[in-house]
Length: 174
Image (cartoon, rainbow, N blue to C red):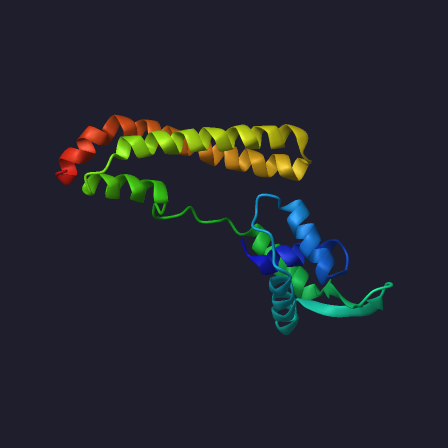
């Protein structure tokens, strides 16, 4: 995820200050890592430097002075360009699941036991996400669906790997 592009998307609705951008990011992207306030302001500075955002006004609403940022025409063009890009599928497997199984097998460990524990952890997380999906906002349901699909794929891989452990041990020489 490009934080800058997400911030541009949030600014496309209307001008906002940093606290509002952080709050909306965390609300609308519930499956993402929450943004730190420092990251929001660093991102706004980069967007401003690159001509994608500008200071719209400075307001004082009974508290500290807040700078409100707006997306520029260049920012809208950049956001449109980013939204039209297709994400390239990952070329390599970089899952810690794969690493755990291979290393456990090489080290003479119990890869099967690890997979059973991991399967239980995945199922528990899937139950949590299913509950969130049915009781949350549409954005939370969307994030939960995404996570559930990935966990389901991991579970299918775990089942396949459990069946192939003997072959893997022979190949590695464990």
